[in-house]
Image 1 (cartoon, rainbow, N blue to C red):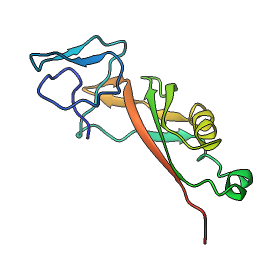
Image 2 (image 1 turned 180 degrees about the vertical axis):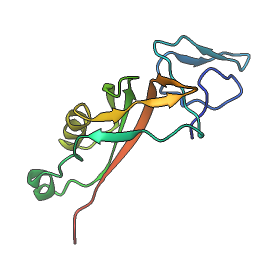
Image 3 (image 1 turned 45 degrees about the vertical axis):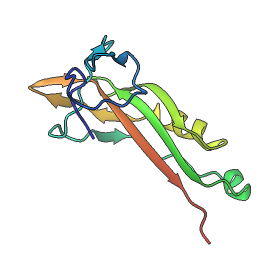
Length: 128
């Protein structure tokens, strides 16, 4: 779900830095970036970078499941502020390292390139 982060009537995930819900129910937000989440915005388009590798060591150890990253795409299309919010041994770090090398087409909103926060899941499943 994507919403304006500065609209106190909209839901904002609690794990985003700089955002707090006051006791009166109003959203308190001190932006470090121009962050916009809207359903009508174009989906970020990856221009460069591969998917994270499911290493043979992780497969041999029987590690499978979901890794979830939170990161920012800058107005220039670079990836910054990569955080692992759901981890698996070894694979979380591989995902974070891989995503840091991704390059995106800048997201344009109201004629201007903007920064956006992306929550990206990666599913690792052993073949049976």
